[in-house]
Image (cartoon, rainbow, N blue to C red; front, side):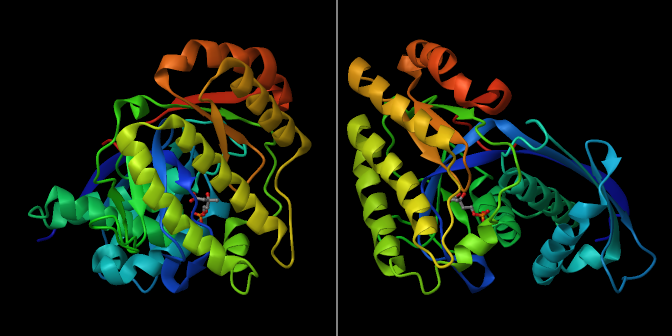
Length: 347
Ligand code: PMV
């Protein structure tokens, strides 16, 4: 089948891990399983216009536009990604691609766009593959899109579907695999429906330590073995929590995971700290509010200083008021993003 040209487009969300992926083996294989809420508002929209070349090229042929402007400095990342996935998409050197991408969240907000960006691009390339081979099924399409996204950025494999995605071999999760993310297959209580995530932008600067460096520091880390084992037991317990809707235990597991992630950073060699004073101020305020108001508000962190504030739908008014009154003051330029759990990428 030869399809000469066309345009495909995807909008893919970011995600926030509840059990964290931190540490990897060769080929973006995670050292432990992880699970995340798929987000909704924080997303990347990418369109790919493909045009068949006269003959197969020696190198990848693509132009890249970010928010309407040519973006040369992103090109090496895309080259690396294409090199990694070429074996699985043999047609990519037969086409020229015009990649146009934009984010729903502000530039340099300190929000990592690798999960939404890499998943959107992986989905677009899968759509090209589907043009060439229309018989591929939705299940195959999603699994392979996640598989390809993983090779771009590990956590990106959890952004294809929603609302909860698990990635990595886990004995007690049917169908789980290191190769791609799967929709969480077990029962989920209705308290987790419409869960909110308000992202407080504490520090919008560039991270001092990339996640690639951080993952690698888990090799020879003194606590690695215990940490990887803990991720498995936390996932085991979360299954009961999701089924029963036990928010008290949910809060404990999620906050412990966030602090453990940062504890791994603080205890690696070299060690580093990505939290800022305002990160800690916010955490303390959240603890205070939770105790006084018997709330189920909690926080989680990714590899940076920003705080994700998680809360159930039935607390949205009180918690949002608290965020505006007490927490926004700790954000850089009072910036924050209101998001919630979402269903995955859309065409
Ligand atoms: O996808 P990466 O390689 O940027 O790693 C992301 C790791 C964390 O965001 C810190 C945790 C996670 O599971 O998303």
